[in-house]
Image (tube, rainbow over all chains, first blue to last red; front, side, top):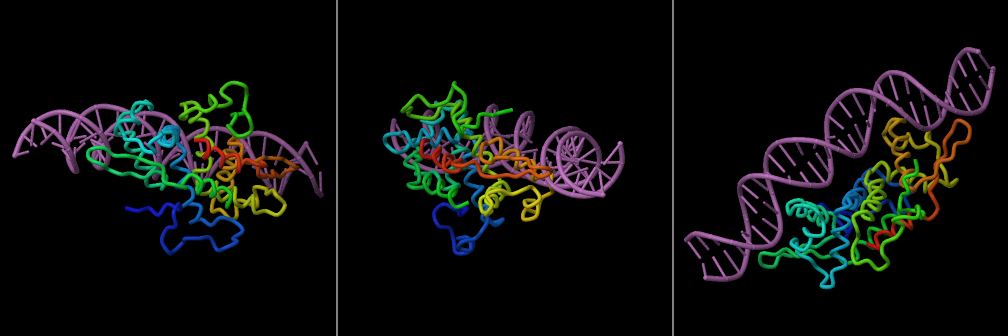
Length: 116
Length: 116
DNA sequence: CCCGAATATTGACCACCATCAATATATGAT
DNA sequence: ATCATATATTGATGGTGGTCAATATTCGGG
């Protein structure tokens, strides 16, 4: 699918704002809003937090359904949104799916606020 | 109303996480999500951007309805959400309402990502 | 090859949200 | 006091999003 989620340099077109643009254009705003939309849910914030706190740097879905009070399909749904936003990385090993923070993604997202 | 919006130290209870807490609790996550919810709309990002870019440091509603393709009531609605999130400050002078960035609010929001 | 386990997908439901039209409120000027 | 202007509020509507139950998929083991 590949939603080119502002984080990690996307494709050629609409990659950057017109240099020192005075204010956000409609398209840039829509792209940036996608990342914040992914962060705008308490359970997704907790998912990020749990993955980040894990010593191994990664968690499988079975480790995430417990702490949150949600069913497995709902957790999978939230994880998908976080992956599509460029915040989480998904690696399937055997039957298990391991999720880990995309390195630098949170810092890059923080940077979006500075360049508003 | 006063929604104690995570930004600028709220009231006494539930002010901070339990020091070096390993992962986000449900309540903290809900509070933090409120700020990101406010940022999760393209038009609100553009509003913040325009206010920030203004040399005077403030803009009135009439300056904001033009750039965005929205009616005046909708802009007022978005501005209210940004004020309640602790991101914008509203000052009424005469018939006009002037909106300005709350100093340090964007930086503090960026910090929320670091302390996930 | 079939079974069980882990995860993903589908479809449905309900709540919330963004937007607008209409109206209300407030303030300055005449 | 009246009027015009700037902003806020209300009510309604269409769309989006979070959640679950049920089902599908994928993979390792026997």
